[in-house]
Image (cartoon, rainbow, N blue to C red; front, side, top):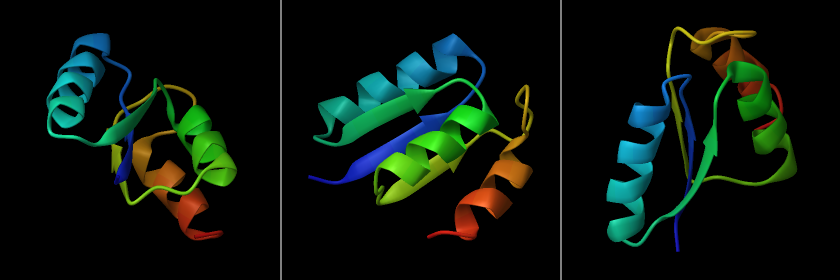
Length: 71
């Protein structure tokens, strides 16, 4: 089963993506900001990471840079 991390500060977007991807058979982890996305990526391996660009604490671009340092 493929594992996907979705990071978005808008709950409706997170829930919609989660519902769709779960229905298609993917395992989905949700986070609400860039910092928690980086933490989740450190703790677990994902096949795909979807990052919103504009998030609180750390934007998606900065989160991507941080994640790329260890993946």
